[in-house]
Figure (spheres, protein in one colour):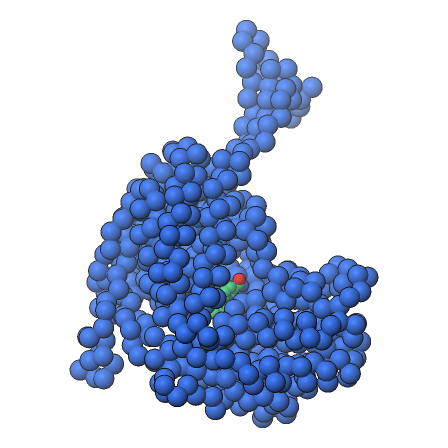
Length: 508
Ligand code: NAD
């Protein structure tokens, strides 16, 4: 037995959740789940084999027959109870996230709250699924469209929001009458498993929401099985592309959200203190492991850049970084040692590429947690668009400042970048803000708002390589994604025989 196997033998073994029950993994393969604060191995997550995934699909398919026939009101009532259960278990869920992801508790709760808002949105499903009706399109004829569920839907989610991103998906899918298989990140699966238990407690019949833990093998099984009608994916761009291409070729509806490099433009007229405070949370909150984190600041003019750097530097040095469950921590550790080392490697790279490292977080340590996956906040100035630290997603507490001479240059940076998730502008000038909003080539825009995550009754999604597929998550687009439209033309005219018509049917 090697050291990893010996350690794995001692830790808690997680399960899958299929057909309303915890099901032990059978593949013999496991993923490591760490406590990022201590660096200790905390649990092992089973990595499902293809036959295990196929069994889960069969269970979800069987449950679909009954669930899709329930009334929207019945499904809404399950969502209302689920909402109450999440509220009741908020502290417990936040602790599960904090212990496996490393986000501080207040941030973990905030992310659950954002997921909960999608549950609240899904409570309105009787209204949201209403179709359209055209009365009397011809004598005795009506034309109407109805929305029907798709069948078994799958969700494949990233490590950085183990509650919120699954809740972007399954509440809407399930409220629409679908059954769901969630394949959460193998790095922090305990919270998604708990959510599935709570859905059962809320009254969702067994098999309506299933959780299958796994890696590429489980994902490939979902992508190739004809019984899966639709796949929602959120994660990195290379995998999003792969999921989109493979799922689409196999005839599935796919929405695949990818990575990001979000810019925040700071105009010369902006209040620098306000912009700096906004940047602190947006760049270093959740250790920068957010798809809407601001990783590039674009001050316009040398003076604005100098002032911004001056305002940011002491703030970054004073960041309170510590155990994720310590209430005084503003930032916790990164999710794994491997990811922390990758982010640290980007700081090394930036120095090599010639950017100016104003704050260096590489040497940061938490004395009482020497093995935790901690990294201090870093700030680069004079980053140029051709550098890899600008082009690539770092996904950690590293902020790059790219100085722009004028508005046009600042507008071009996010617009020409490969990614186009979120973008923000800080200014006091309405004309400038409006012009920027209209022209910028990104999907979600903040005006004096650093992280413009839409609320649940709007839809979430970026542009360019931040999304593959054309329907966004939750909100009206979510309902459209998880339903298909059926259009019915009906005639009720007793005693009238319209006769054979060999031409194109026309309405009079
Ligand atoms: P990831 O792409 O590594 O993993 C996402 C999911 O894909 C996981 O469930 C994982 O098990 C699975 N997966 C990993 N490798 C696979 C493979 N080769 N084949 C099939 N499936 C595979 O992403 P991550 O590291 O967990 O999450 C961070 C990324 O997610 C960042 O790029 C971030 O920007 C992105 N993200 C995007 C959004 C958005 O809304 N656009 C939101 C959150 C996170």
